[in-house]
Image 1 (cartoon, rainbow, N blue to C red):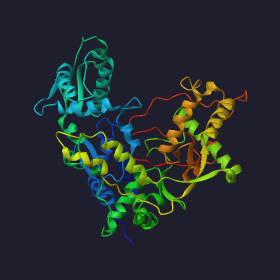
Image 2 (image 1 turned 120 degrees about the horizontal axis):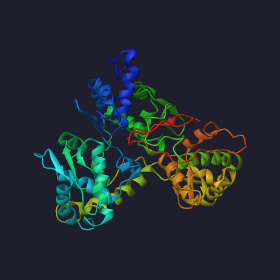
Image 3 (image 1 turned 180 degrees about the vertical axis):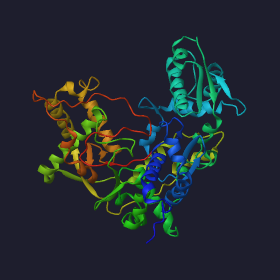
Length: 477
């Protein structure tokens, strides 16, 4: 059977093409300097082949010019973990920062090639103050800090270029100082380019790809399956429509994806995932040297595996909530923040927008680990390694560290939080032997975990994990 994708790529060039494909899928915007020098040239070398294969594999649209590359994606589900794209120094944007991020480019006039920070603030103030609950007060330090974070986000992506002055000096100068920016309108245009006109939507669900129907062509179903595989850490058969599950079980369809990306497929009775042995095709590398939270999450999984091996019969099994239910709740939450009157009156009905999903007639069950057991595990880790091993940020806050580690495991689809604890999902067992992720004992017999917090990687370009027990699951941006 002839290969349908990357079919024009010579065997000697396939590795270079696959690396370019992974770059496009994991970086929100590629420029001459982002994520680093040389990447844009490498991707543009394969721009024609990438554009063709991305459209046929996923239904995505690749925008490629001599100065930047941007992928416009078709979305199948809302993913709250993608908030990391809108972040600075590892801290996701809050609502104020997200609102300012939308308002600032609206202040750029197309004919302008430069703008001062003072002029930008003068334009932002009336727009922000016209929005109830938002506002902008030039004397409020929190408002100024939010504006600085948003301006840096635009600078990092080349939408703005700082030609004079300093944002930090302006923010701390008590009204003194200024900054001058050059505006790149082309980058602004590709950054804010949704797949569908936002003003025509009556619900956030309208941003998702068209629902599957009985009359959908097989290729549409295959595209949805491939999109889920590259966007999610693991795809469980019970979370998707039966026709998508059938495609995920078809080795020929998935082989096209592995050829295009160079990733590896792992299949289990419950689902399938793409694994990256290098640990770079992800926005959350795990396990590895990602700081105290990452390493603690791995140690918790090891203890959980011991619990399942020794006390499985004593644990309570509960139905795993469906992804469809999660999506419906998330849509209602987002739509609740949409305007109810004025510009878009139709949004009053938005919270009733139905969301498709893989409702399973018999939801699978998973073992419940109660909150008290998780707390016992974190106390055992603190006793074994010493509180100081977990860094200054956490050594006096074991429950805070526990919550952060459980949040990470939930984002990776390894556990499912429920009232009273968390369900352990099947993919968690692939990390049942994490000894390779632990450092060797020092001469004094102590285990130096190296849990100091590392500097966050640039969005879309995480650093590779340390020695792992298994390849990191893929999770594109």
